[in-house]
Image (cartoon, rainbow, N blue to C red; front, top):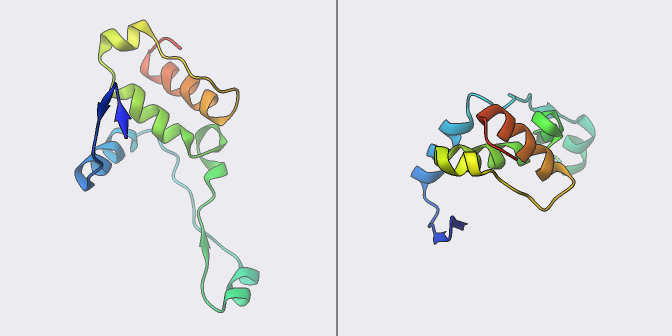
Length: 102
């Protein structure tokens, strides 16, 4: 993974740190169970509905984590995304929450 032009090796510590950054802003989601899927696979299937996340997708967590890791100077300079979908919505919301230009 690259972050600000530096190669970063993912580790458990990195993932935990990201979780801590977004934990106050993520939407808790219930796990949903489907009797049809359970019967089809012969076991219990639980679904995590990411559509209930802020902006309707899982993209918010990554966008928020990335912008939160920017320095105040970088946040003032602003962020740009080349997207008109879920990622763009996530960047816009995370920027607004964190006070970064987008």
